[in-house]
Length: 197
Image 1 (cartoon, rainbow, N blue to C red):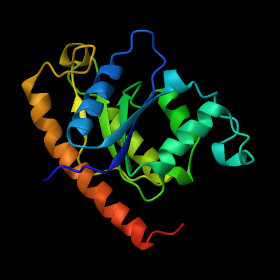
Image 2 (image 1 turned 45 degrees about the vertical axis):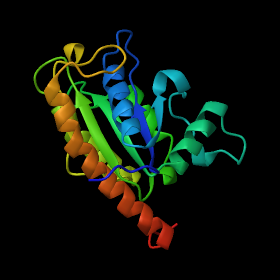
Image 3 (image 1 turned 180 degrees about the vertical axis):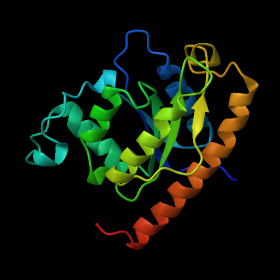
Image 4 (image 1 turned 90 degrees about the horizontal axis):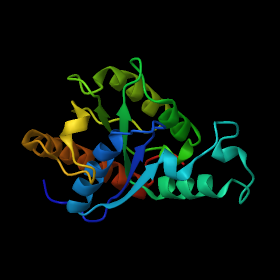
């Protein structure tokens, strides 16, 4: 598949743990997307520090939302698709990620999502995958069929997000090829006005 030079992609990552390992996976995905020509922004819950959900973004009067919430809304609105990076906590996703996702709604609509999960052990966080698929579908950003689980996260990447395992670099190609297909197809539909507004 040819490179997509003009897709806007937001990578969403949420973890409040002090020794976060998933940020390495998020950085890896950002690097891979940039290499394929995407305009990429990483939205990290620790950087934007949204409050625990009280009012959703849409519930504020125009111009009255907190600055960080407004900035994320603008990034999500401009995006063609999302890659969500999640660990697995008790067969589900981290509270910080759920809180980040739940502040928004229409900003996700008619745009695809790709799911990256990770774990310290051998299963790559896949037990959180079904839970996350349901959440993303409800938000209006259905996930693509292929997922990208990463096992043994502590040794899979260096701190900058470079892969330390050849198989990771090989597997991510099919995942991102599929994500690009859906992102480009849904963007064409939105441009033609097929999607409801």
